Image (cartoon, rainbow, N blue to C red; front, side, top):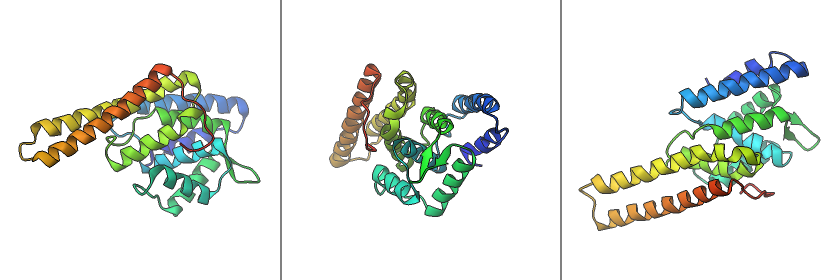
Length: 218
């Protein structure tokens, strides 16, 4: 069952505007519960498609090809979701009212904006150094400027926690492995230096509590 499977149940409960607001309140509670009780799971592959689509739809109208290109630009060659799966996700989001249709393609609705904010608050589905963790980090940073200023500290927190965890793990590997030679130790130190740079940037953004807006994905 995908992480966002409850969206359809909640958002299809009613079509009235007043009831939709109540449903979105329940949805927020569900996502907060997910964040509080299932932090080990984090965002999985299908959830990242939702995040990419909702973020892209706030920047511009898009179709399946544009979504695929946007994910490819953010993820590089680390991760390429199957087109059929992306199409299914778009259908689910449109059916749930998170995406609307314009003449140019899909656009993110007001409900979709709230859902994207909830996804941004969830932890990533793996360490910052693993492939899925890297993609999650890149997508979150791609769309962080779309999050209201007051909420950015909340969303930077899980990213910083993941980076600190990866840094601790890198140092643990470097200290405990008795079989590594000088080249391996040098490589681990290089990894540590990169993580320190990333962490420094994230802490700087946290201190500023502001990321300048941009028109692109990065």
